[in-house]
Image 1 (cartoon, helix red, strand yellow):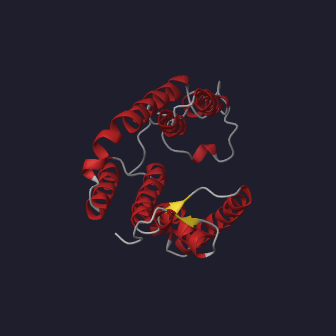
Image 2 (image 1 turned 60 degrees about the vertical axis):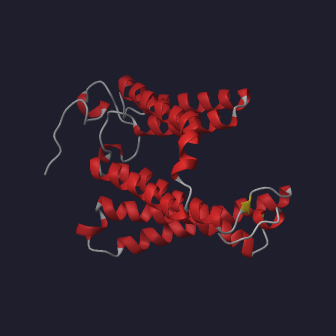
Length: 242
């Protein structure tokens, strides 16, 4: 089924081709225009972090970053101003819920590992069923994988992100290298599938779930095994198994 044209679907350069020039390579193949996904994701992520950290300097930096990301989408010609404003608005609501409301009810819903896994998986699958596209598969898959990994890591390894600066630097370098390897390996594996399958949003969701799982579970476990991190539960005298 072809895409239905319209102001909520098409991009700025598609609606006004004589007035707006796209400056982003490959921009012609992008998805819908309203809301701006970049603006939404930036506001949700950095707004959540700012609310949780609560430092004025970090909050100002986060606001500046969110503004620049949204403004860049207008400059590149891939979004109208209202697309970016809508993305910021939705992202701000998500940030508020995550930073202020989620800490109040998540502990009650995640009292057990099984309940946590079911909750994370159910939310992602519900959102994907409501609007499952190639564009939404990326953040939803990454979020699902990171949620799985965070739940598993918190129950078993107790990864402590602290340590000397040199140790943290080695973890950063190792983490970036392995993340690139995981991304490249999964991309190559999925490219071997028939073209009719490789582009399916569901498989894209699984691919990015694997990437997110490595970030929050695979890499911390590797850090512990290689001696690049300390086990927080062991340091606190707590059992390492649930």
